[in-house]
Every structure is written in structure tokens, then in C-alpha cells.
Length: 153
Image (cartoon, rainbow, N blue to C red; front, side, top):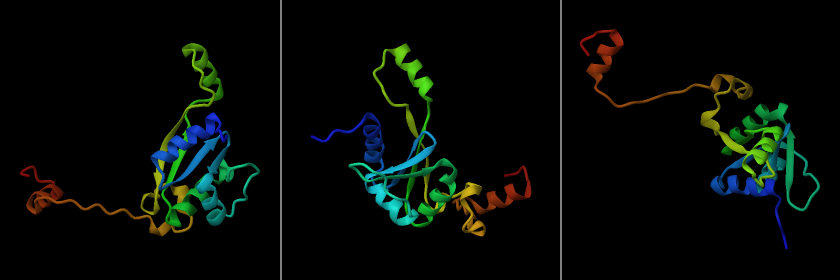
């Protein structure tokens, strides 16, 4: 019988909601990639697999921006899952709520793609390719009057 740890179950809940994405799952001071995402990390980032029954690899948090940028520029949608409570807060919550939770809470904090790289730390490869264009429909006369500062618009 194959069982998963509470942390792995938490990862699978995020993966189920974002199956077409690479999940960068924060664990302490590292970002971890599990299962099929580990294969992407090994192939596209050159990460080494860690020992264990399931595919798994990771990297220190100091390499986050570079690795997130490389994955997004390679065409992957990257979902970043961060810890939103500390182990001390987990212990406090367990005591207060009589909870049986054994893992810290985590939340999706970002979805990165080629078109959404706006963090300056993620623009190392192509800093000049960080332009944004917005197009809207509207009344051209109204837009011209508004742009000129006229109050008649």
C-alpha cells in the first residue's frame, strides 16, 4: 500500500488544481519539485534527483528568481506555493483549535509565464524584453479629450 505524508497530500491538492503547471513548493528554505515536476526540474534546470521512492528535486530559495525565470521562459506555467505560517504558528494553531494538522499552511502566491515576468530579479536573460501593452475599446473622441486634459469629456 502506497501512502503519502501530510506534506505530500498538501502538494497533491495544489497539483490537482494546477495540473498543467510546474509547482514550486516551498519547504523551509528550499523550493521542492515532486513527481512529474521533478522531471521538468531535472531536464530544464539541471537539478539532481533526491533519494526516495518518488521523483523529487529542489533548490535553495536564493536560486528562486533565476529558476522561476528559466522555467517560464522555457514555456512552463509556474505556480509558486509558499508557506504562509511558521512551524511556531502551526503549533499555536494546533493548541488553540485542537487541530490535528501536522504541516504548515501554504498558499499559491504567484503564477508565472513568459508574459507575466515582471519581477526585476526575473528579467536577467532579457531585460529589454519586459514591455507591457494594454489595448482597450472606447470612444476615440472621449479618449482624445481625456488625454488633452479637457473637462468636456
